[in-house]
Amino acid sequence: MGDIVDAQLQQTMPLLTPYRMGKFNLSHRLVMPPMTRQRSWNNIPQPHAAVYYSQRATKGGLIITEATVISEAGRGYKDTPGIWSKEQVEAWKPIVDAVHAKGGIIFCQIWHVGRASTYEYQPNGQAPISSTSNELKPQLQANAEELAKFSPPRRLRTDEIPQMPFGFTGFDGVEIHGAHGYLLDQFMKDHINDRTDEYGGSLENRCRFALEVVEAVANEIGADRVGLRLSPYADYLDSGDSNPTALGVYMAESLNKYGILYCHMVEPRMKLAEESFETTESLLPMRKAFKGTFIVAGGYDKDDGNKALAENRTDLVGFGRLFLSNPDLPKRFELNAPFTKHNRSTYCLPDPVIGYTDYPFLEDTA
Image 1: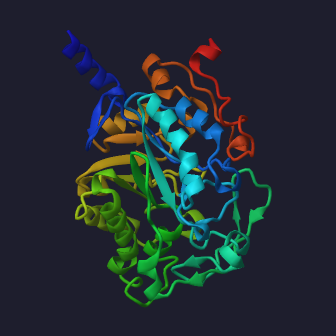
Image 2: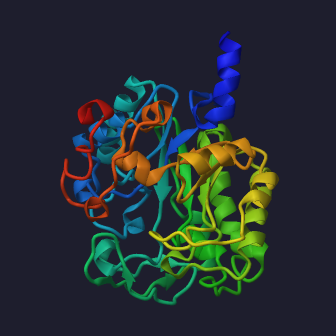
Image 3: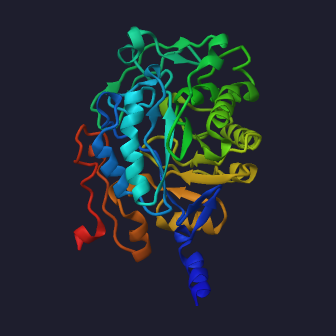
């Protein structure tokens, strides 16, 4: 009888079926993806983050933390968490423990913003670093009334690149942030990278730095605990590319050499942060090229998440805004319950509760 029920569930709700991701036994296919919340005062994770993440933790559910800065020079936004100091590492421990207490699995997304920064965030007021010396034009940020301005970057010298600090300790695993116009994307995308050394020009050269980082992190903690997030089609922070499909496929194929756990890709329809576009482009070529677990994210709802799994276009599906405003999202999927709408104006509000831990559970709305 149980086998019949499991078969019926697999047909009607693939999102709620179990999945083995390397050594991790997932109880469902929903992933809470990284979402910047800017509530880590002075770059130190706070106790309210333990509440936030544990609210959204489920037994055998995968959570990927908000982008977490790997060095003081990697900062570009106020009150984003870091992991470069002992104090920060200690502050993350009760957060990880709170997720584990619920039986959840938590990966830390490690991040360097590159040129998406200003002098005020940089040690000794120095210039931000990038693949280029071209300044990023002003951008509209979440919750901001005015355009954010950035300082002119300094082009990394060739001999500096292998020394970039991408070390890490703790958590169940690490997701390397290679998306959305930040440092690794600034090397991969040809709309930004104007180098003429071995890190610029050809597709292989532009992807070299990202793959060196993958190799270094895999060597440090084990490839079976490493994922990489990519957004080949996105144009966040002026990070477009002339051939995003070729870029995505090349990276997916290249990652197989290192045997990392997963590749997490943002859908082509999410070219910009808050808008979904109609497009004929697809992540399917990357899905076919990558041999490990494939995760998709970007504008998904329950129906098209189930459809993506049923058509074998992915293994797992990230739900950002839905997880933000519905901490018990898997339960709502299971019961076909209504969803609470997210409030964009409170995404990055500097408040430990509002728009963070105050979204209701299903029993609170009954």
